[in-house]
Length: 113
Length: 424
View: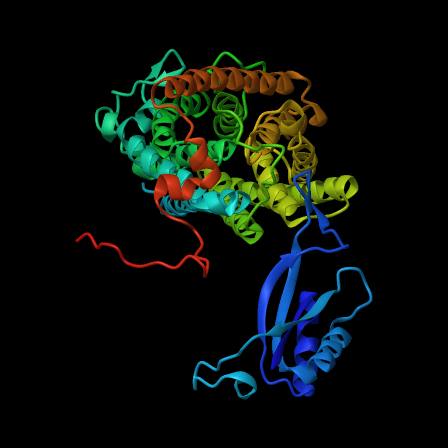
């Protein structure tokens, strides 16, 4: 059985998170650009005197598929590497994955990880 | 004898000025939302297409043909560059040095093109392309060519007209009245006739690509060396002065704009720098040949600060001059034209010339405003009554690029596409 660890983090923390995950033995991940807000509630931009509140700010979503027993450790790695201590650092969560298949070979389950 | 130096410089200048309009397309295109960037750029390219043809048909003749009451040139006099078209333009009566008039036709055509394109910024995102093309043809004919005739063709607002007080004759070196006040007034009238974009003032309309805006400002600046430098009609000290004044004023205007917004809004922005570039270029346009480089600093710095403050007026008064043609071109154009009354080195108030030049400059600015306002109002209302201005609300909200041009500027991964038919 496996779990999906998803982290939504500050874009500028991506390189550190990636290195930390590699160092922890994670062999693959999916990274996508995302936008959103939490308590940080965006920022203000001014264009020719017109002020805009930009509430959806750029984030990066990192997704890692891991075996059940590794999930907690991977969460800690992501949190440790992404943390700056300021509002807007993001969230990391874990969900149960019903099945995983490797496209190249058709393998299922843990051997597809 | 043919002055090859001047002829070569005028050919270069004409090419530089033509480049300004694609530059303007980037300047304006970056400022609109991503769903309407192509339409914005197409209005500039459309102006090139329409005016580029019209200019050789009756544009030149209406600007420089035999005068009809000092208001416009007879369009049939040199229609199609025939009739009484004189292929030789004498530059110096004493030496007999001349340049081919056809070079001047090219140079002047590019001015007419950019003036029309400037107006389009007031009506971004919402007008029918066909209506714009028709407006461009009629407006350049009824507003631009007559003003060019009045100011540069020996008409009402030239030194051969009635507004010469003592030593003070009207000064408009490269187009403060003809180009910028004219375009700025037309922009204001059009914004009022066409109406606001849906969601103006309530929905966010952020510039979608600021690097485009800065690229466009850079191209405009480069092209402006032809605009002002070429307006010296010589490869000489006057052209050099125009070049230096153009750069000095523009640099000062960047500082003026950035300081103003830094104090008011807290940041010196890239959009502010790009806008300051244009405000400075506009303001120095009428003055490039008649102020000192020190005067150019004043012209530019004040223009940058004034325009930075003026772009907010549309929100206060509730007109949607989308890309601030009024705040930049009308305001800086007026300032540059009037500033000559103070700073013209021959006749200005600060150089002991008294108030005459100031009076002349105010008068020609007011005449240009009144003329452009009346003509634009008539043309804009005529287009509204016949073709109509606005695209449907659905097209405007969904994006005018797709609705009007059948294209979208940016491919996103989720769009996908398959070939449906190839017409060959």
